[in-house]
Length: 196
Image (cartoon, rainbow, N blue to C red; front, side):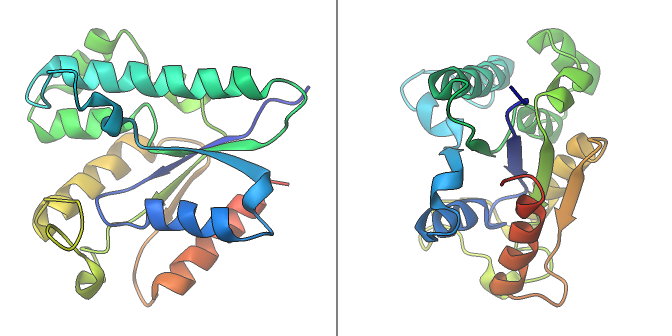
């Protein structure tokens, strides 16, 4: 059996991760070729642990690992569909760094190594936040569920680039000279190389 394709969609708030997954699921040419995993932060609602605690990011890493592994096991060898992840196991590092905590401490605290995170994924597609290059398209509360101001979204986006750019198959899709249709087309072109 070939190793299963597992791809991370990352990027700052409002980059288009959710929109891309929804569009692919509705497109008959793509719908049966992948399984999409939601952003694990939604599973933390009742944990009574806040992002102000270092433990929160360790929980996020372990929840993402667990969800990816569980879905891969459930699919088994007979179902070759790719797994598309709305964020990956290294995204919590960007939020850790945003709090001013040391990178080395993250790896010690989560008992992981950067290379382990990279090895989990076939590719990483970074959809840059709309706040950086397409500010008119960046929506926040109450129009969207994200509370981040544009400058906060850009800072997080750059931290996400910092933590993922060393992946051997890292693709950054910015907003320069693109509307959403062009950005989505570029992401689909990259995905087509990995998803049969």
